[in-house]
Length: 548
Image (cartoon, rainbow, N blue to C red):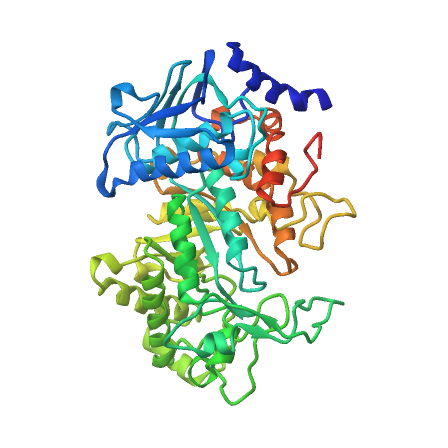
């Protein structure tokens, strides 16, 4: 097995001598790959050309690529006319928005796409074809490598439009630089949605200027560890939050990598940190003490949806999210929202009667309806589509219409089918096996986390999205997403260890046609990623690597 590790780099280096590349370690696997004879070598000053595009964004994609390439390899580039260029990026409006065609010969590299994203993804593939992962990782490469790529023709497009990863920072906080590392890895695997879970019972992580106590009070708690069973809160002052300028910096970083950020403010449940900050109008029982929660699990301290001030609070938060995150979606949570506080609250009981229902879950839907109406009244550029966890399906969703998206996690396949049958869009994020915070093996060396170790790389890879779904419903399936919850995970290195390489497996499910997916082949291609992770400076699970 040690020999195999060196076969691919050797084959790629030797391709500069004119041989055919025997193997291509591409993740996610493209829709179509055909190997040719020979290779293209980056030498001297490589002449490049890119078609014009609004905002000059195709040329900007090329400029970022060439700057990274030069920093890693020393190879220089210069702009040339189309006919004289060795590397050309040409528009082809017949292709789908994220699709690309890549053709490498011994003389030139030709890329066609319809949008800047397609060119970006083609260049990610080109980086993976290089004989060393330095350019891909953004590090200085070795001097004795011949920087060449094998002759190949790739015609590629994603299976799903939504290819996501969610990180929970409500429970533990990691900071800007760690988020950027995650975005870099996501971009390498052509993932395009970062779902940022910013609020929880245990912490509120984003500055909201109209409500400063959300971060003055709600971002801090009196324990780093979260209590569970025999594990007790430790009394340590712990917390942190992102200013709006921090968040805008991360938005800019993500946009350069063609990643949209989906902020989540989980309301009205999972909201004890917010309630602790403003109990006078968010709490169902403001006369009792409230604090940011120190425990795992589900708090019963939910927002008082019958108080008009609480509804206005939610509208104001949405308005500020819209200011900071210029993308199409906002996630409002909706999962695991106990109704006991509402049942004991006179105003909530009166509101339930006023809407003509006996089901307290319908108070939650009524709350969302008011927020939906607020969004609908905004100018077109400020309107956002709402996403909810699939528990929302348990209420009477009729007032919300079908213009919402359901993220299916618990009983995911059935919940997604239910949502699609009702005319709603849906995203598959099955708790088993796409919750990649869960332990990925049963070895005693695994870090503390949830699960028993059955969510292995193989189990994650072998999940089949949209399996057996009628063709009439398939258009409602937007894609797939891996989720990472952080009850037990206090540091970024452990996030990375549990996230990788399982995130690569989810990325391939989102991009690669199902008919081409084979786990043994994926593991073979995955072996080159260990070098990428090390060069990128991220931790990773070693279980499936022959040379950890």
